[in-house]
Length: 151
Ligand code: CA2
Image (cartoon, rainbow, N blue to C red; front, side):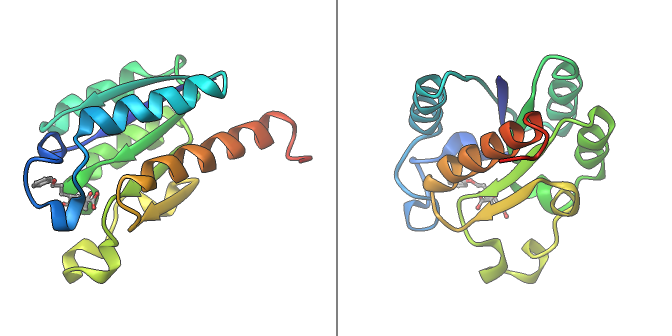
């Protein structure tokens, strides 16, 4: 099973600023640890971060026919991007939306997501552990679908 982790704008700053909100781990550390977990479970995981909406859309298009599932922390684009929503729906690749912070406990503009209603699931508020939980949830979903939903 081949998975893709997408991170959106400003997440490249993780670990360098705002540790109280987003934790002390860098994106590189989060990606390395997630790849190790994926590998230990017999999966492959590719990681991509961009501060550009179009680059994220392009990466989603490239995943078509090659990737079984997507983990996405679209950052602020979660709350604004119909383009990323359309790309995800257009490729029909199952995805899990995730966030480090509990977006529902923050400003009202972070309560809306353009991705959530069509996601397999949404995880938020657990800091870097959100990535682990999202991976577990996505893999269980994909394995369950592959076995015809019988487990
Ligand atoms: O909680 C999350 O994971 C968010 O996706 C993070 C986004 C925010 O716009 C979403 O509402 C929720 C912001 C990412 C900013 O990342 C930074 C990391 C370190 C320092 C500054 C920004």
